[in-house]
Length: 74
Image 1 (tube, rainbow, N blue to C red):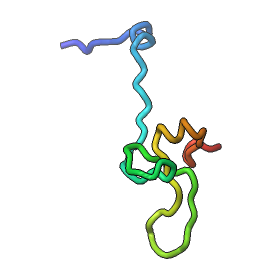
Image 2: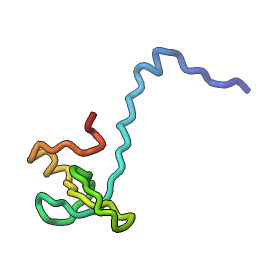
Image 3: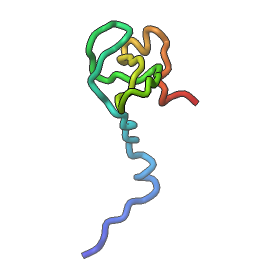
């Protein structure tokens, strides 16, 4: 039994897999409703427990208001 090999040409032509981004359901502070894919935009810590506090935005609001999620900032 032989092991199939892949030539460099075949690997170069293979479509790239899309980047995996975590998605979560939460409250969007901009349109004031629940949505999928919310990302943290601003955070603050009041020191009163493990819950993350801050402002979150859904993908449409991120684009509409030109917001940059905390994880994408350099």
